[in-house]
Length: 514
Image 1 (cartoon, one colour):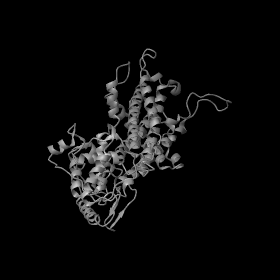
Image 2: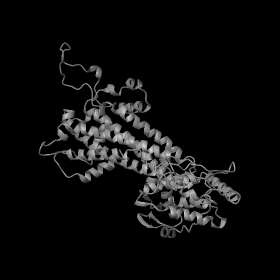
Image 3: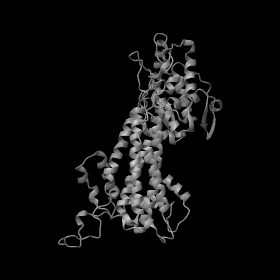
Image 4: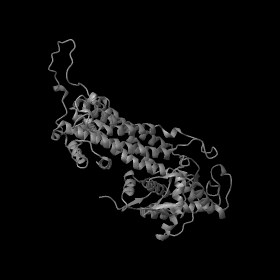
């Protein structure tokens, strides 16, 4: 049974919990009591010390202007100025689900007790999340060094009653929604503007959502690979446990095991030891009528998907650390009564991770596209009719048009797969001289993962059509039979050419929940 209330404590937020909060409006969050104590202690310590020490961003200016001291009576104004000056993003709004995920991650960081913010701010954030008040955040603006400054500033803007939000299915002024819900006005306290816009919450929130999608895509592509092996009556030795133990990369071993489990109930996989030619071995050269080995997109699934599997596992490790980390500056270590001025807000870890993830998922997309090509290209498979045509080749075209779509999408992913973190451009008066571009990289990775699902949808249709060419569905594994029956429930076999645009959209939705 899933939780209806998820506690936010600053240290044990999971990727699954972020996905649950984003996907289910009925789930509420609550700042844990232990975290509330930590927040209060941190705020009290900051108040005491802000009149005794020079503390960046509290009683000084920001970035290259940090040498300017700010008097106590102007420090609240400083925080407001920071937010409104940085809420300058442009372009299309970032998807609401990504913004909500970022808000959850940011609150988790703030209540860890190293930010110096007030309980009032924590309560404000909690109310915004629970009411699903989603700030409108433009896509362009983050370079990922002091964190996601511009995009997080748009979230902060809504918190103080400025800008626009998505609420109850409509884009509205934040002030109007705040008034409607009787949340009251909010004035930022010393350091709260800086605490709201520092850090990697936007890129980390996006990464947490697309990681879950990437994990499902890898699983689905492996199951589709098993189905493809059945269609060609593949040999079982390519996924044999003993073979992969001789090259024991964790991903390769795991994918091969997944294939074996899936195919356990299939009667179509051939035993290599029983493969005997009818011809005699005394001829010098003689062609036999069967392929001895399958093409790489079928035979090398563990070796190709294995590294992708490992990239996803590593991404999970990094993202889990990041969403439970302190990414402020300065960091208020009240236990030791010190302020650490450092760079925990730099997004290189997430940028590197999502860059690797989008490269891995792009490779997965290319594998899917090649398997589509195999079954549609009669010259390659030498068994199935051209484009799996079940009517009259030449007059009808079957899945020919669908292959163009798969090829186009795969090419799009290839362009997006270049490591975006390498596009470091110095900014902020050269204070931020090496930047991560983490949020842009995460948004690109989201596009790559979404594209992968579209090609998976095309592969699912292709495999089902090939199954109809082959005949007896009952010979396939239980999992393949389930997949076949599910897709055929919304996308009937293509016997004659038909308009299938709406059906394709349904299959694209289906593959995300298989």
